[in-house]
Image (cartoon, rainbow, N blue to C red):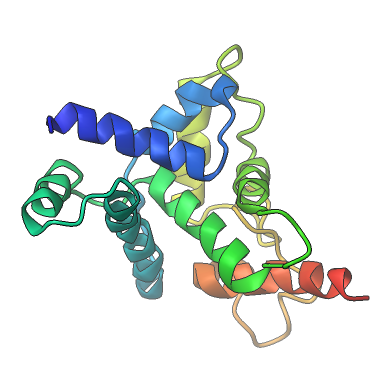
Length: 190
């Protein structure tokens, strides 16, 4: 197993996990090469979720022996990438929050929805602009998006900025996710 082969295989596995559209290969590669940086302590947990995907990949590839797992771990070492972060959140949303036995897997929907909320869906390979993508990713990670969540992976609910409560962008990602998804969850059962 060569390092580049493992990295390439892992990247393909991540993209397949969310049925990523091949027309966004430049954007996906950018997300793969960009480290996820958090400024709210508890968001480190979302980075850990992303890193856990490396183990899941190894298991799905049938790599069970300790020595092979160490090789994979060495080849995929480093901080969580934005791609890993977004894939992990998409999987978490589908499996832990929005799973519905009567529907097909919606992991790809959540991934695409987050890209759309960030404003990245206009950057397919024909319209890719590295500077604009950098700006969007930096705005997201530095939490300089709108108080309503515009420019974030999740949008705020109408009553998010209750008097005395933290602004939406001051909440950890997990709390933002819950607030964003709760109305969608109840819509399904009304």
